[in-house]
Image 1 (cartoon, rainbow, N blue to C red):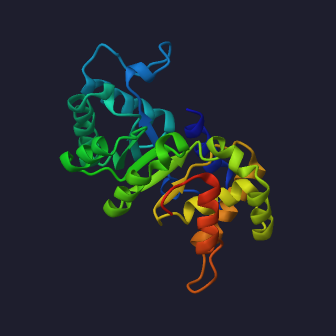
Image 2: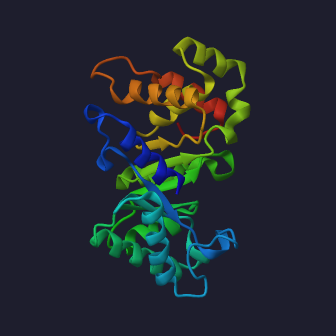
Length: 249
């Protein structure tokens, strides 16, 4: 509800010349199964069918976000570890796309390549997003990221800084960050956005200064003129991957 109130308040506060439209925003949310919900704040009846749970959840999200559509809707994780239940959720998701209530679909917390492949191959509307923690326990999703690259699926990383604090605190990475005019944290984001060409690191900061720094490094990568030197050269990418412990780069 806070996000919906925030962006609608911003629209009201801006002058006509600075008008903010819904299409200027990217709104993404998740459907979370009952076992992942706060039992005191479930936005649907957990005793109802999976299809009804998903539908009610979307209705609540649209109302809270004060919008008629979502740019992306993600399944929080494979549903109960059950392929049939996961596909029930996904078929309902697909109906939202057909009704123009959702533009793109994805899944989160899916670290098993065969599970993601099954979802991709079985679905009518393919997942456009895989959102996972980027950490050593999953071997940094090397095989999953390769599959995403082959299928043109955006890999969204979260817990990107928290899970890699030791590496970011090394003298070597701090020196490289200083050389690039970045903090170790924004250097990590630059690394992620240069990795495989389809990775989007998610920033969870609520600090305005840190968010401005994150946006700045993003713009340096996105708005780079053709032929201009990249923030991180190939040998620097390999250097960072070695310190982080990412295999095969």
